[in-house]
Amino acid sequence: MSNRNGNQPRKLAGTATIVMPDRGGPKAGRGEEWVGEASTYYNHPLIKKAHWGWEIYIYFFLGGIAGGSYLVTTLAHFFGLDKDKTLMRAGRYLPFLCILASPILLIMDLGRPERFHHMLRVLKFRSVMSIGTWAISLFGFCCGLSTANQMAEDGLLNWFPLAARVFKALPVKAIEVIGSFFGLVVASYTGVLLSSTAVPLWGRAKHILGPLFLTSGLSTGLSALSFILSLGGSSEDTIERLDQAEIVAMTTELGLIVSLAPTLGPLGKPLVKGRTGLLFGVGTIACGLVLPLLTKLGFRLTGRPIPRSVNSATSLMVLVGGFILRYVWIIAGRVSADDPKAVHDYNVIEWKEGTSREEDLSKIRSYDVQ
Image (cartoon, rainbow, N blue to C red; front, side):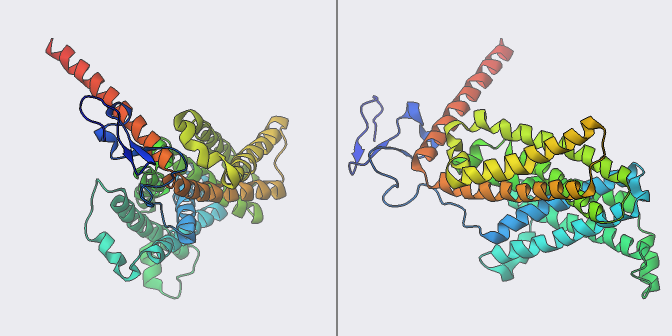
């Protein structure tokens, strides 16, 4: 270990060197600059990687669709598109089904599933997981009320006249506004949850992951609704408006993905290298965003309506790309957590940026004193 005089740091078992303060320091945590073929610290990874399985992949995906599609339906209700009954039905049943499956998948992944209710004993505003748990619960409650109102409107509760009258009398617009807020939290908090960890890839993208998952939730929610309406009897005007919103959402999502390159730098290798990188580049970027976006823009520039078969195909591509987006971020995060050099590089970057911020604050304070 280096001494206070800046002497050369000593070796550990001939495989590692303790990071000097000017290359990491105490704020970066204990770490080593790995040399030779060393890949772990005493045969243990420096940080633990996520153990999540297929339940979390689907949970992330369905949560985004639920939040995005519920917001779209709320906006449609406020801007007069509620006359399209197919849109309103799809926009209320779809989020409810997605959010109904989400807590089941989340509970299945818990180490002790029978203790899931412990997550609702307290609300910690400094815990992303606690906020997400409560957001899912409140969003699910709003989705349930909206769906009950739609069921009553559709005559599905005529066998229970009292319940039908009660649910028809619900203040749906107020419920939708509250539900849309929590839906946005559900769609975005999974990205914030990833970036709140010490995994280099996720932590470095902390300012992008939340907005990226949110815009992906909007694009997949819009695409899910567009796919359903293309199969049903919805009006061409409604589908065209959804296409316009899809173009905006996909363009924003693509812009956020492009901004990852300068932000991540070398720490982004697990996301762009190997099979994971190929899946991300082809599945999400090319087939899930660029190709559907160019297709929709091409039809709009030529002034021709998009055939329903083409619209269904592009919507399905966006949905598959949205699922792959969440899958590759989790897989790439595992690779990043297993890379000791990435951990050290991330710690050094965070330490230097933290030091720079402290110096800037000191200058501001000294200026205020003067």
